[in-house]
Image 1 (tube, rainbow, N blue to C red):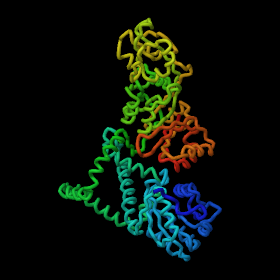
Image 2: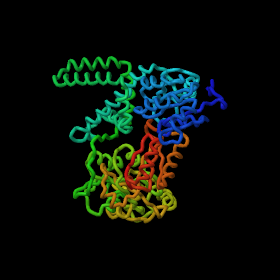
Image 3: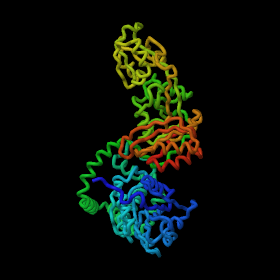
Image 4: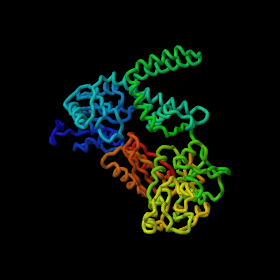
Length: 569
């Protein structure tokens, strides 16, 4: 049976949101406005005051920080009409609910806690907790409105809600913060080679919390009066474990372990099954919980990785970028370049990111997502392709081996001049050259490859577009400012992860436009995980420390689950 709205267009309530310009307030404002409701917004900075809003609105929603909720309720509660509803959206319910019930008008009162954040695309599948105070018609309206939008509404007593949140929110936040802080305090960094899947999973959970608001975590932990009981248990159990460890009392430890495992008996099989999929996604994730020192200069002996072997365009880019002779370390794959940087086998890496004919290099973009590295500069290399062979007679060529990109860049020339030749892709053009000495096999590479490997140039400049250019990124584990300066890096490259919803790209682009920031690149990519639906790579014509860019990134966070500065280009 199709769900319908419980009010008609002539009887829709006026919604008032105190704090409606904040991230969560803006989300609910958009939700109600999209359904055709009049929404009033008040804050300390609006012309409309919170008290005036409380007098005019049928449903008054307090959506401010947890620390400010009680004071705002006290300020407006006596201005709410008897036939209206006063509610709040905070994560602690008992104290705010008691304060709301003190209204002189004895208006309707409901404590509401949405168990999600402002980055979800819709209410579908989300849970909202209702804690009843004095229900009225607008309480029923909100319940049915949220349900019709796909949310699950759960009713709870305020104290039980707060007890649950002391565990679900406060304990989880504190545990992950202490975990990350403990790792940070240890000497040295946890290297990728020593990192286990469980450690990476735990680190990512900690990273999700630490990527949020410090004030929010402090409020969740300190403003819930019931967390003090949970914290006391936590401290006692940790102290007991410390005694077991000090005394090497394995019997007591095993007894404790088995008791906990028994209490989670039904959940453990589910966790084991689900974790297999998660570990597959985390297999290449790198964890860094120690601040890296900034590279002040390129010292003698600096090691630079590139997509090898020698003679590739990546190798040529390294030679062009770095005039001084540094230690050059070839890698068989682009992913290998990133791994060498992560493992600290090299100081820098040079990787191709885009060709003007062949397009984006997806392997490079994927690795920029996976690894917490910095782009410290970019370089554009003109690409001039040659057909090389171990014969002087082009008519004898039956096979052509090359990397896939040169095939795409010389597609038209190959069809016109060697239409019968079989094209065989290889991991790199140089690898193709080294794979055979057959005179019937030709290769696509540049002049340097012909000189290096003693090949005959059968044809030059075979690329279809004469302005064929490949852009390379210089990648580092730290921000190498000297490299950025020498390459005149003036732009900022961003990763924006979003949940797919109509208009999200428009909203993001409008922020840049409003701040007069020009975008020189915009690429989209479907996410490899369920954490978000799409990610966008954006190149902005401004440096990372530009005030306008910082302001824009602050605004964009309301639309994006991840806003990450990948570096300068």
